[in-house]
Length: 255
Image (cartoon, rainbow, N blue to C red; front, side, top):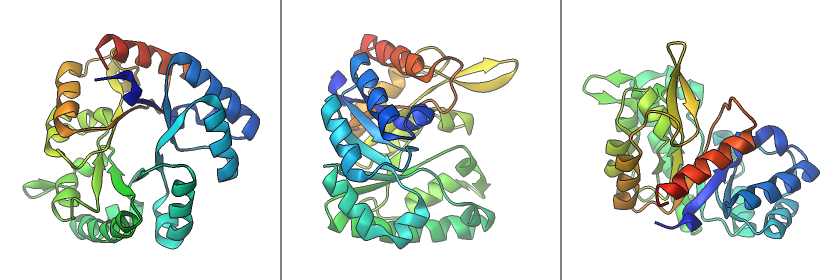
């Protein structure tokens, strides 16, 4: 592995990316930590061309994005143009809208089909499309979970995976197992750790919690993951400090 594959998921620093000035300063600080790429998510209404110029000026690459499902449904041509402008091949949706979840098993099947159609159009434009899990997808319908349904009832070419290690563990799954299941179907992984505080599961910097990182990182290599995106939705310290801790720990692990 090489540290060139490490990226910072910008949702972690969303409060520092809501205008162009703050966005530029945050990009410079991420590059100073050592990150060479970012996943664009949760940023403010900054024009795409300005985002690209700021990221380029900081010496970073945009490796991936999170795009809302409604925008993917209604504004896909603009999404494609934005990714072409950013030289970014990988598109992901951060979650399944509630209406599909509320429809139970049928809703999961319907989402798998509709997301696959979006993925087909992105594929035709030279892009990939992935689904980012939380833990609610581990609801069971007979012998299958919702996440099983999403990936078993969609074409691997058109709906790929952005497995989130924390949320798989939170849902009672095995992150390394799920990553290995996605061999050839997973360009980006989300890395975050889990600790127990006051009897509750909480997010932590990579290497500071209880997840089995040797197994997870070995599985990522086996699956052909291109980008290791560090994300921490909630931090107990400055989010940039959290991203630095995760970066340094991953580098020490050989990433």
